Amino acid sequence: MSKNIAIFASGSGSNAERIVEYFSASKEINVKLFLCNNPEAGVIQRAERLNIPLVMFNRQQFKSGEVVDILKENQIDWVILAGFLWLVPKNVVEAFPNKIINIHPALLPKFGGKGMYGHFVHEAVVENKETESGITIHLVNEHYDEGAIIFQASYPVLPTDTPEDVAKKGQVLEHKHFPEVIEKAILS
Image (cartoon, rainbow, N blue to C red):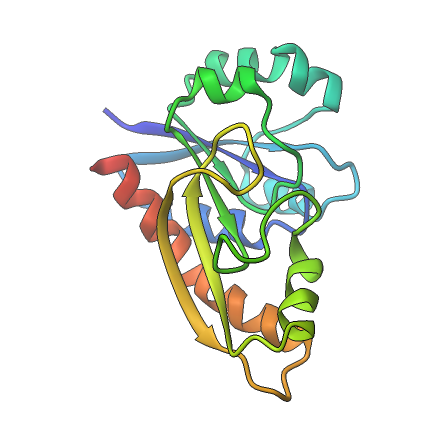
């Protein structure tokens, strides 16, 4: 029986689209739903173009359990955070124990935690003169970026790299590895 996944995104949705493409022919994993907390997010247009139902929600709906109800109604088995910027509340973590996967644009535990996302991470990597950075795919608990690490991949950071260069290198790894790691986690 096929496993249904819901993808949460707050931004452009490039990882969400890559995941949909990756599983488009799968008989085992189905991207059933996108959820978004940002009415300005690019993922909204991607959902339309990809013909994936999209649910918009606010902080109150997230904390109250309304989002869990939506996930249950849609028979969601796994939750994927792909550029989703809010801390996942306890009710969601408890409803999907060890079945929420996040991707972070750095090698955790470095450059993780509240406020460390997107360009803030890449700027910190450059400012700290790191010689490498990468991506971390991890399970989600009730704390930012502290869940068990499933996978990491790294790339070199050159002294001449800008935060934009670092971001581009990271996105290549995200698009390559995130769908494969999700598949392995769900099917193992």
